[in-house]
Image 1 (cartoon, one colour):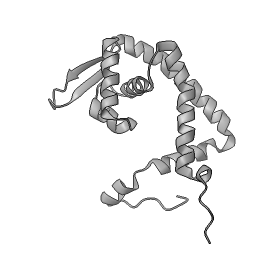
Image 2 (cartoon, rainbow, N blue to C red):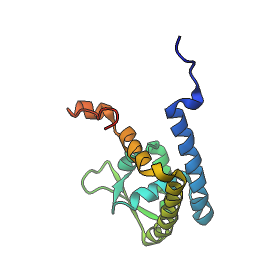
Image 3 (tube, rainbow, N blue to C red):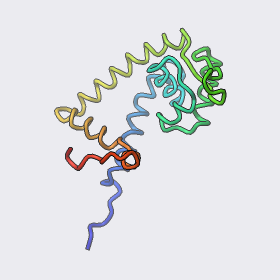
Length: 157
């Protein structure tokens, strides 16, 4: 007879709960300092990585509904934090970029994010690098790899 299912031991559940807790911990920083929502923070963080990014790209990368990304972008535009324009390459896409004000805000937030990251690494202890490598492996899209002719790594690789 198989062992009974225990939700608290189910890895996807544990990762989701932990991710939510960590996200809420860090959200205090950007909410208290700048009044940003989680969606606004994610849009800004993504924009900090590239000069211009479409709403579609952000939606795909941050695993957030396209409508949430669009609403966050609109609020950030109204606050003078981002600019929005139609893409020169594809008229169907809205392209976002940080303004000078947004870049300055993001610089401060990036420092806070790096400090929080360092704190989390310290909390993980000696196994931090193995944990991060495991997250990388779990984050790979195995279905996409199969369709592209790649073989997903075997357990332990």
